Amino acid sequence: MDRRDALAASLLFAIALAFRLVLVKAAPYGDEAGHYAISRTLGIWSDNIDVVGDKAFDLSYWVVGRPAFAILYAPGAWFGFTAFRLEAIVVASLIPALGYVWIRNNASLGAASAAGLVLAVHPAMVVWGARVFPDSLMAALFLGGLVSGQFGRRPLSNALLLLACLAKETAIPAVAGLAAAQFFEARRLKQSTRAAIQLAVVAGCGILVCMVAYLYAGGLPGWARGGDKRLGFESALWSAWLTIPA
Image (cartoon, rainbow, N blue to C red; front, side, top):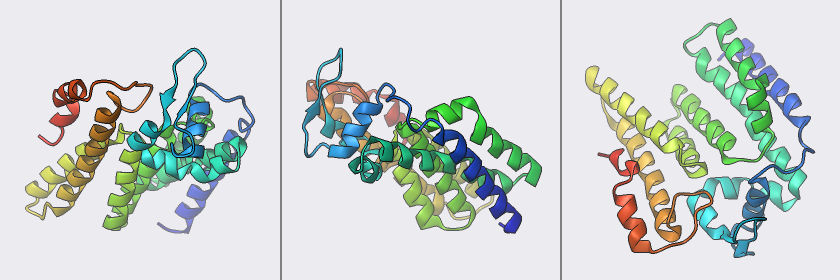
């Protein structure tokens, strides 16, 4: 990546940050209050939280199911909700910059800049990037993993992809798909499949964390409640998650 690319990525980050900062003082939306409690307490200093119109749910379950999300946003949450939002906005603003770098590897400066600009200013990306949900963190970590892989930083890439899976479980099939693509490409070129196997292990670790959370609370991370662990295991046995390693 040359100086022009570094400047373009930095500019996209600045534009994304400016648009999202407008909403930093917006009222908490939906699950944000719960997310704030999760990161602020990590399920240690408070066992559960009452949600208006719903029963109390176990905070520690969220931490077990999405540990990267809870832990990485904890520093902001300890300084209050505004700092919590600010940290998440900075993370979300990285997505256009990382997207640009990843796309630029196989596209012109203009095409990569246009794609990055869409990620920076599209209303859906701006609104949800200003709210603290696990999706933006997961996307930023996943893109960071892809970019690190492009630069040959395999250990860092695997670590970031694992964190993406632990931020939100929807990254698991993406990592698994990446592993499959790399495996078949390596076989076609008669090269080592070691990198693909490492990615498969990353996806497997993500699945394992989901299974632990599933058996603990009787459902995947979200608003699930506790239940019979035997019934949970029976349901999970036929889950689509287990078709990934197969």
